[in-house]
Length: 89
Image 1 (spheres, rainbow, N blue to C red):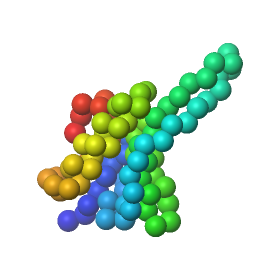
Image 2: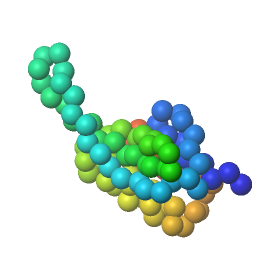
Image 3: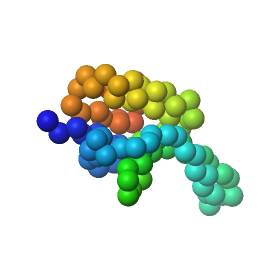
């Protein structure tokens, strides 16, 4: 059975290859000189970094990482979908 993650972007990642999962924040300067921050859930493999999801708050991103790690530990399903709302599985 394929061990698959479907990222928010639709990218497909084999989770056997993941060596780390974490949150990261990136600031962007907008045209009106305001600064916005997006919170990313990222995963590293041996030779690549995947963006699995993008969230509006750090709390959302950390909750997704927590739920994802718990899911990986149990391997309940064959596919994990990083959908935009933090409540979806």
